[in-house]
Length: 355
Ligand code: AQP
Image 1 (cartoon, rainbow, N blue to C red):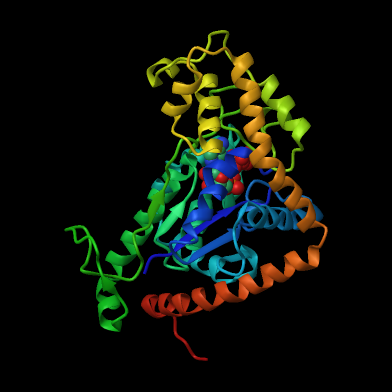
Image 2: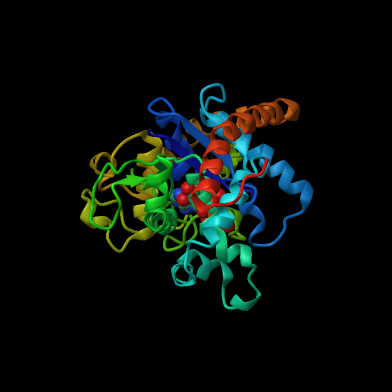
């Protein structure tokens, strides 16, 4: 059964990269398949505990951003991860499936741990196992994310594959597997955990910093000018686009001309994603034009798309009780899916059930 799962960490400063790479792309998917959108608060403590009040506030803010962006809480499930215990329980099982060597290769850990790896939390190292648990607690098949999550999704597949293989006989014995949709010699005929598909597509799978076209736009960049926050008002958006770093050349007419021009490439990608166009079409329209012409057009479309979301977020956040009601309802609906999966997982592993 197809199912979408994705999430964003409540770490503050939700930005255009999170919106274009993830949240905006969830909106049409919710009409195609049952969808679950999580505010992944368990992940938000891996790089150090944030101020507790800020963590709660950021959880409500990300929820508001989902709804303001067009996720319909009546149709899709919206909840915060810590409210559904199955995530942590399954992550423990996956800690015992994944190999140290697999996690050692994760580039996000290397980036986030920095030079002082000995001092990184064990949680930061095991983060990809929790992410695999987030997805597989719902046996989700489709995970729409930005390009930076590709490696973690490959690990999720590796975990599912190893688990399906290691417990192939047991899964068959219990009669709870489903036929493998893509038979291969590396996999048994029946699987319990699906092999998840990453959904990484469009012109903005990796939005770069407005100050440096070689760095990812990121919540933790100390420069606020490096990113457009979803809460920015029209003036802030226009100012940031105007100050965005560029080179002195006019825009090229062809995609080839964007090579070795990371800042130009990034702004064209952002425009394309906001306008729902291909990058080629943007170049066909603006090729030969200087940034003094392109930037105001970009600012205009950014304000047109983002200012209503910021306004709707403010309106929603003025009523925290309503946001909490959405999250509570979502947690109940998410639990109803994850609980039977974990019951199966415990049976597969052989944990004795005495209750
Ligand atoms: N720059 C980006 N371009 C496209 N997609 C992006 N995503 C993040 N940054 C970009 C996507 O947003 C979703 C949620 O991300 P997250 O909350 O897990 O946080 P992150 O990836 O750690 O976000 P940041 O901004 O990069 O945070 P820091 O500063 O902590 O490193 C994911 O689908 C992600 O791909």
